[in-house]
Length: 231
Image (tube, rainbow, N blue to C red; front, top):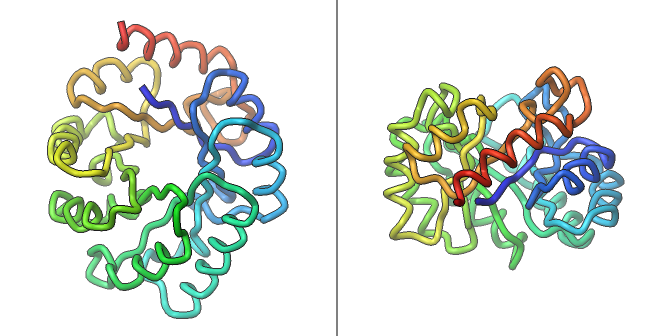
């Protein structure tokens, strides 16, 4: 089971790696849903840990429909992130009708090159997620989709997540579940859906809040549940 953890600082990244995270999603401004972090932070985290670091590329929180100026900024950010040595980027682009923006996505993927790519939770604004999965899977550079199965927290969308997991089995894309999960709901969600990758943010922190640092006790509880699932 792959465990991805959100990091917003070098301290987060080091604590997550020491606690047993398999991969990091590096973000800034989590109060706005996560924005592109500074290049200084990107470089510090990549140098400070040995696990893969995937960096979110999201220039603002107003919309997932980006104009040419936004896309130019995102392409430049991807270029810098790639040069810094990140393992991957986390991106998501939609049309005004809230469908996958294939043209914009192609432009970003061209710059990403051989880096790993996650399509982020812009996916959860799409009405027909099965159709969107098929579109995303047509881009072989994209390895996974981060989703809670819609607007509700992941534990409330087990049926939809199972549908997406089943649909993804014949593609190169995997489903990475995130949002609203905790140690108490993890086992039942994984058992009901067949998930192989999970993503945690506030649930691994003191008081389960992004205002506080990573809590080793919460981390151990999640790792314990994951270990049981693998037995």
